[in-house]
Amino acid sequence: MICLGRGEKSVSELIEVCNLSQSAVSQHLRKLKIWNLVESHKEGRIVFYKLKNKKAAELSRKILDFLKK
Image (cartoon, rainbow, N blue to C red; front, side, top):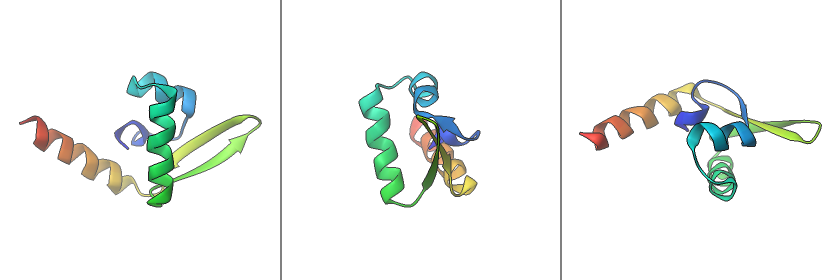
């Protein structure tokens, strides 16, 4: 979710920004869609994802910061 916190991104952008494999990004996005945290739309063959609620990214960032301490 942190990778989507700065706005809409395609799967290929998420792979690059998050430094994850395509399969890992796809699995994360599938779960986030199931949990109703992201929405997507298609432009041609490219699917773009964005958070439905910006507060989810803030919460995710705070949890990550806490765990790093």
